[in-house]
Image (tube, rainbow, N blue to C red; front, top):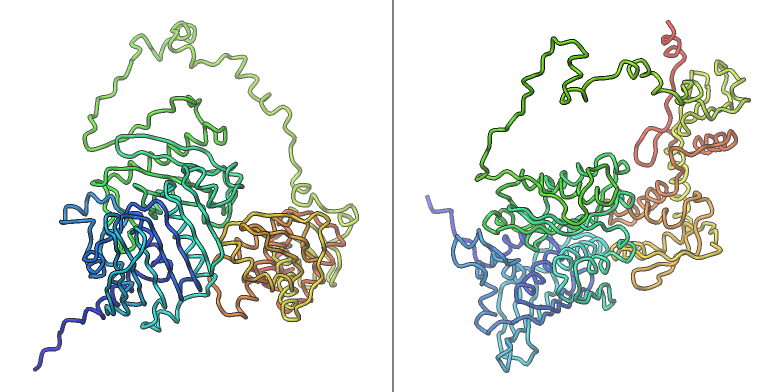
Length: 613
């Protein structure tokens, strides 16, 4: 029987490796920009066309490469970062695997120009699908210029599964933000289809955060700092009142390397316990510094999952540091922290020496002594209670009013409704409001309960969906237009779907610099501020990826319906309840919200009667 195992050609092996390292255009940006930083560049320019599918160009002013190094850099496992296995446990650079350039060259057309400062002339290399077409001397400036064109041109299955340009560029911005935040001493420029997205000068960490996320975030930041023998922490956390339902301003860095760590994330959420609105996430920008020998960054090709030697101790440090920062700013109940010196966080390590605790015992204490004798002991007198104080314990409740259960549950009933009976067996137009959240009305089969927010979402969703199909809706022009500064990802997303929003009644203009001007809103939108509706809409719409136009229109309608619907605690008049119920049952699907949640529930008469047996 003939042999069946054979070595793969280098080109195929590189394409397989590319599947791990280069998942989408954002992966190319990450790898090349990190290489530029490792090359000691302090100015990096990124040019993107068609969300990186057509062009990704990275230009830096780093140390550059010699002609030999330039050619060798495209070989697999060729790297200047490590020399032996021990170096893996003392890594201080961003890249080190030696797979990135080989992987990129295997699935794209790559052109490299590079020159070292001491050389008069540079090197140009052109590679297509791992094949070196040419290498020659060229005139260029100091540093490196990578141009990656036609990504995945020879792997059509991978290119086919790329998302829309808006989604893919959103991933590029995410990678860019992570690198830019970790390196405030580096100047960054990002252009998309020749339009400026970011122009970030050299600065400090706080100003870099403001430059990346906009001026609005400046008032949200709380300084955090903690130094221990295991790890040092500095950076900023966000105030609870600015927490949002959408993630995007949550960053962990270890030794200036971005990382994901769900375990440490829980330490932060635990520190914010009971001071956050439900389903919201606080902002945080935490920069951790630790001995590289205590880390293992070599467990994932993208190098974002990092293993720590003292993970539990670091959890405690992060949790305590966040609690301290919140306490100093009077946001959470805390001990009186010294504003200048802070406090030491006790941490257990392998070298920690345990000492036997010392307990002071009052040898004169006798539990069988009479009360008068017992009170003579000054150490024990604080534990005694005066008899007259015991007698007046019930006065603690003075001033508290007893709540009437019926008025609590049906506080919004009108006098007219209270006089009506809900035992009518015919369909009625009597409506009762419970907790400013539920609409109750008797029907033939029993008692019908309607969730008012979900009902309004269903009404608005079907109306918006119909409006998008006929492309016509009334706009309520604002007397004073509202200018809003957005995150670049949100700004690009909003401009991408602006035509559909116009059909729904929005009048939004691009103001430049990631800002928009809202001149008008849909005539039937709720009384919320335009900024609130836009923020809620973007939070909802950006959670997930939709490419098909029909699906996109449906998602716009869903997201806008959820953002524009009335709140769950909004009081409604009897007329407003009647109108909402009428509109709900005029919908095609009145039983479920656009998100599949139940709107209407009926308690049958038989079930009601059983409750009183």
